[in-house]
Length: 56
Image (cartoon, rainbow, N blue to C red; front, side, top):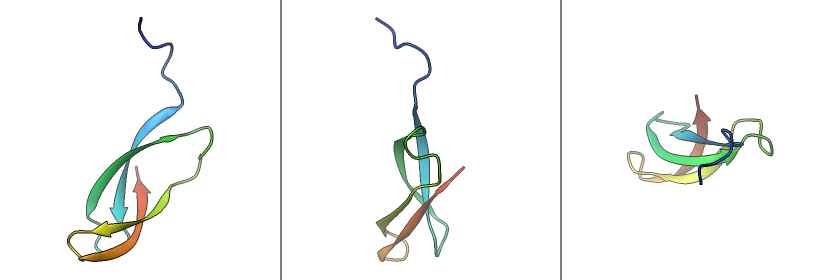
């Protein structure tokens, strides 16, 4: 069976807050999290953990 409708989950890209490199892709539920996501992730170009923010 095929999925019903488009669903609430969407794919988002995360970019480093310092160097702006887009290194991570993830999904989120737009009904539960309408604002932009912010996660603390490892940035390979900075070689340190930094805040990564959702870009559109």
